[in-house]
Image 1 (tube, rainbow, N blue to C red):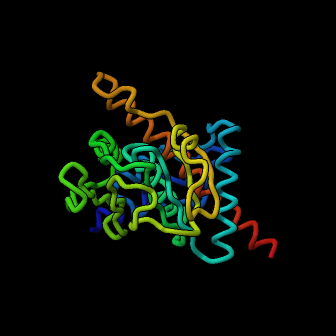
Image 2: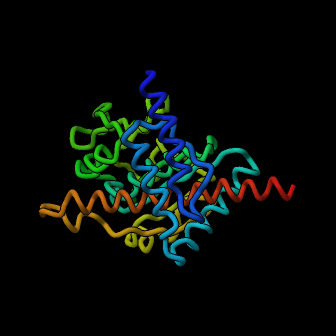
Length: 248
């Protein structure tokens, strides 16, 4: 425990010290698993390289989230992809990490699809390589669609990841922000029932490398891209809330 506390403090110091100009400056990775904290430290540096067009898309979402938090103190985000198998799960868990390190306890993240399949094992492996601790929680939704408990820190609530439609009872039924993480779901689902707002931040599907020598590298790259953008997103939310409070 003493070692973990020392390592957590080191991660927090490194998180601030290694940031280039323009990177978030209020993040704290103390509560994350050590390997995950190291990944966050590295990705925070990359947030300054997010291209301007992409920043504009993320900023629109950040403003909505900030407004919701100022108004009600909490906000639900449901990340949606066709099969709820890869990108939507990665966005869900990284957005929750972003909320944690930016001290936004009112943010709650979920994921769903336009159809249900399974959380792809390659996605689970990428989560583990990034530093999340992942274990099978149960098979209540079928042997081929287990529920994974995804942990970002010992004292933090785990995230339940299994494939489901976005309308599943495990997800919020109304008032949530719908974030489309793939182009096919964005095009095929122009109206998200129950959503208070809808945004599109599509990512290239890592399945393009399934069964090849580049498979793990492709999944890791997509996980890192999504993680970097979700860290940027939540840092922007925090900054915009701070600006609102200052003006008030």
